[in-house]
Image 1 (cartoon, rainbow, N blue to C red):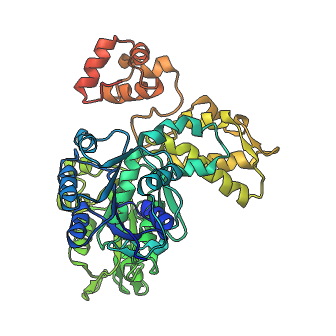
Image 2: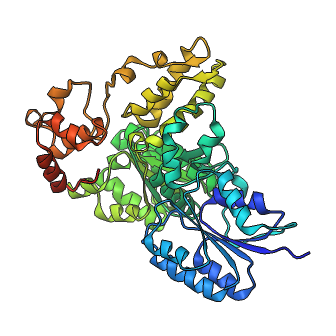
Length: 503
């Protein structure tokens, strides 16, 4: 018996695998990455059903609406299902309301989504699978994915359902490699991961910007693992840990006698990596001459070891990282504009943990499981107050700090229950340590001393207002009281500095 045909339009590898696993015996599946591909398939053959994933739109949805209309006109008898976030663009809302298109908004879990799709499609019998998009599915496991505001609404209950790991994972987007994965519940990070996975499949230089401890090195290794170069070497060059006069030797190599301590020929990282991946961390420390040579490698692949006239061609893929935005360095004359614009084309911002607080509890669960296994300590329960303390702390040291705090808590746990007493005192007291983000005040200072506008000459008004808003849970009334100004004055200053004035 010939199976009905289902087209899935998505760039989300995890969702693709869920649909493949669930419907592989009931549909002939065609996977498309764009609506244009879907339309082409509809013009070439009869399609029974189409499932379109429009959760991660950056535009207003007008182009997607136009293509959906063309698909509906081309295949008027085809069952069409559209997935969106809870906050769907108005034009797509109108499309769903004025046509027979089925609209699934902000599903909270994989099980809920598949149940909804099942009820709409009611498929029968068995299946063959064909794919029109190569996404290296063999290297991805298939936990769950989710979306949107439903996930956000579940955020508070996640903190109090400690043992329900399946539900916690169902609200997250996960990028899988061979030995590691990057999981997030943050809407911004979900979009970033989906775009990053696409970039990872191609031989392009990727720039990662994020604070120390936010996960840039981890993410770089993951990029390598999901790329076609996964079986080749991965080399990490910590540029900030090398003296300036040795960075070039480390990258390009040198010949014997090329400088005083060059007692033998040395192969640089660009040769040693072969066809693998090189992470250049703290790229901002490179001097002008080193930046010129790096730009040449990126543009042409060519370089010469120090003291040699022989030109080599780099075959490795480059991932570069910095814990600060490069644009201010360009404006200060410390970073070459041409190199900046070359790198900035594929820039990905790795958000600090305090800007993706929905990830804190999920990460904490993962670290508890990891540390309890590593140190052979049984953890039977995590107290709500323990999780609340983690959630309220701003984590200037980001994921790395959270990992170390969980390690300490697990080591000092004696009865199998993690309580807030197992946390370091500075977490419970809110003593914020140093960070390279100026919006977090260094050290623990009394509120009245640190947040009065007239008392802080060295800190700009914008930075001070941002910190006060954060500490007061973005309440303008409480923030104005803290700063000793009126709500009207606060509102005007927020407007002046381009800060969001919405509650």
